[in-house]
Amino acid sequence: MARATTAKKERPVGVNPKNVQAFDRLAFLHQASILMSTVRYEQKEKEQTKHKAVLKWKGDPAGTVLGPARYFNNNMKQITSRLVMRLDPSVKRFVCKRCETPLLPAITSSTRVKSKPVVTAVTTCNICKAKKTYASHNKDYSLFSNRPDVVVEQNK
View 1 (cartoon, helix red, strand yellow):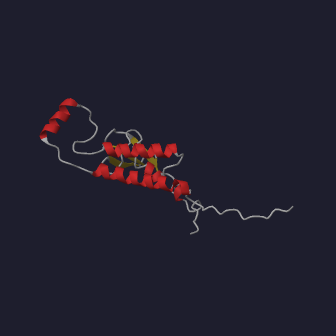
View 2: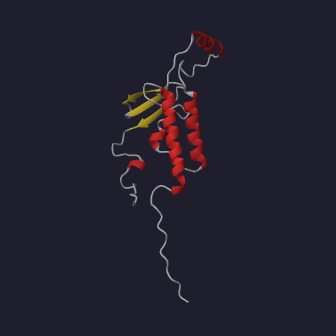
View 3: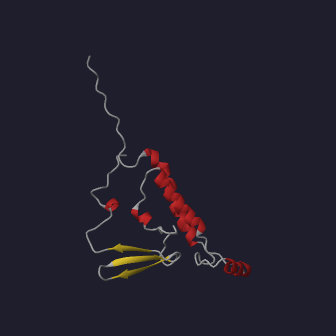
């Protein structure tokens, strides 16, 4: 008895439909962490003296809300590890590996360019003083996610 051949179900190429909500959640957490790291408020004199007297930790600058920003970044890393997903390299570069603070130039980090022995960009976290270096010696290098031969077009 011959079997009738059935056409295979066409799966959409690109994003897995199961992970769409997870990607939306990751995008929200990333945006929320950047927002919380830019919030500033004025401290009262009592809070300033109490803060200096009780804690001698030289972490968060006075008048900033970096705790929730760190929490959002930590939550983002937990989601990606739990669902076995990868963060985009541009998002990874925005997060300090040591303290998980969003690295925003001139707000929570400072960036300088070293020219010897190889041209590198050095980003320093202003909170924990951790340094990240990105070498730029190969002009033809591009991130895997930015290469045109890797991008797959979706049929809509």
